[in-house]
Length: 561
Image 1 (cartoon, rainbow, N blue to C red):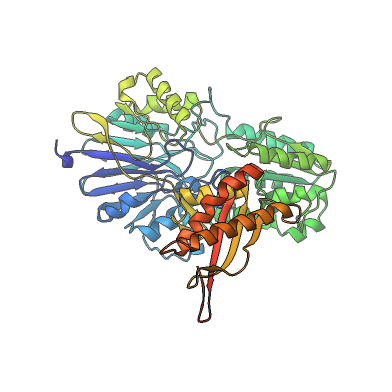
Image 2: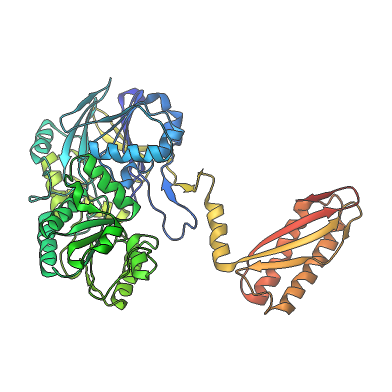
């Protein structure tokens, strides 16, 4: 079968993980990209700031790329755009209004100039040689969220984006009528959000959260309220500000991302009352009953505003026993311990704390099992490939699809890089494109690999041992006993005998190696590492990173290697 008759679908991120979403559809010489997100590193990725997709395939096929389409403005869908634009030429980016504002801010911070960022609306249609693209509105925890239908020569591919089916939302409801119409015309492949695929039932409506927050504000009229939530949840921020207005409270913002989100929400028209926003200094001059502090830190991030308030290290806000702290959020995977730590510190300060565990004051932006099944029923796809989720989520979502009359053989559990091929006659998995994790460490992209991470882990657990030796290479002499220093391995002052033994053994190894023919720096270093490792393991039970520094000193020059 000729390759030009095939439509290919693959992910560069978002499969087997929550985050780093990036999906591609290719037909002949055209590629459409959907989303370009980041994933925040787990604790074992020491020193890494972000994990981004591998752009190797896109770079090799740069001339085929027609557009990047953005479903919504969350970091796991737009966060890697600055890195993408520095690596690959993207002719056009289509994004909804809220996402565009967030992307503009990112590009401005990175000093990247890009002119072809185009706002799309639900009724926007995009046409290329092989693709006809349309959008449908979804409900999520950020405004302007959309799913995408890509009509290809081999059938329609639908990507839902992140969604929930909330029948009483705060903001526009998902356009289930348009979804059903697309489903009636025939969907070949549905790719659907799997984040909450393991959770039975239906997600909590945002209107319930709104009612419960109103009740807390009503019950705590005399106290200062400190509220932490996701800065990206613009609709919730909008209604929190509205609740504050109705309760005659002013709002002070704490945290950079909160400032950015409120600023964008005001520019986009979601928040209209600018006068209700006051400075921290003004908030400190008001009575407790007249103010609400809206801050970041709902996930227990050490440097976020709420964590510093809980620690007592915030320069502007000091807790009092009468304060009320509200966590309008739930811990995302991996953050439960840090959130619990922050809550414990708040209790120690004597404040009253409301969490989602005691009161329904947070709702996920992702649909649970009943909503996922409804999405499958609306689109009635011939084939199904869950996306955006860990393996257990993808597997559970496939199982849900089979209960909705999708044959098991028509479902795919994919990994990043796996290729689904669509032809007129069949849909099958075959082929693979590069889709490794790329680490971002400060300004360095991709320079930090698995070996560097391994060394960092070793240093963090076993420490480092530095051996400094002065030699006369021309005369094959060790000029003085080696100097030993350590960090994170042993205390020098408390282990003088061991340090002397290391010095002695290192000196013997160097002198012996200097007597061999054609000796060089690399040979000496290698011999030191290999010779000292068994000794250190025997004496301490641990082997640190051994870093030899050999300096050649003679009458004419001093060379450091």
